[in-house]
Length: 292
Image (cartoon, rainbow, N blue to C red; front, side, top):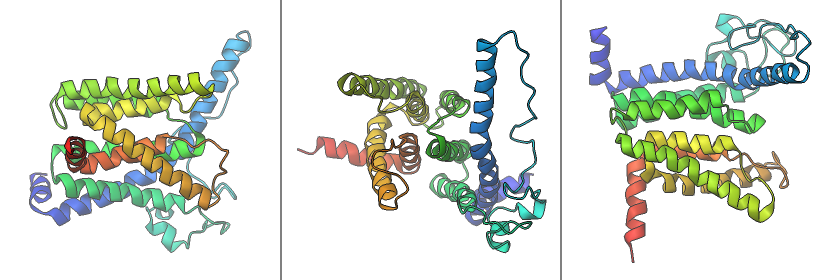
């Protein structure tokens, strides 16, 4: 074990190899989370509504459904995914992007999410090396990836991810791993209150809700990790990212102009950029403010 840690510190190539393998494995698990967590939440809401509306009725018995059960299977033919068919990215390529049972096409998003998990981990490793920052920021990046995809699919940002992310940021920064605890605390407070204020001002002016409460919690979580000085740059970045995404989706005819665009992916991507290049961005932003 000591040799393993020595190699991580002494060999950048070995560090990046480990992060690549780990990122691919986590990316494969994230595909399960992205697909199943919204369904699990919906089932829970239905049971809670039934309990409130019809407390006299016994709860409906539903088959077990969580992140582990049932085993992954093809949605078209029910073919159980065997271990060698579930190797991140590689299995997709070897199977030609088709189910081994019925040859139905497998969505390209699955290997892309797996690859994204590895790319994010490698980018963090290149930026921070074998350090505590790499250890804690890889899970943050993977959580942001999951939130991005879930929000794009369902316009939901599950509390089960955003709230632990917020508390973890405060706990980690109690040791000043990323920023001092005071910066983290006010980053969390400022992140939530900033978008909360924008939400209520926009609603008062237009009568419409421009974003959801999950967006407040996500920016609060990023503030807890990166500190309050990064909030304004992240908000500016998220606006630019949102504009690019909206134009791209409309151009590709993936979304109509009249359809609401989730803001969570823009905040998450801005957070990833700030994690990797926060210091240069903050310096450039401060220099721009001070330039007459």
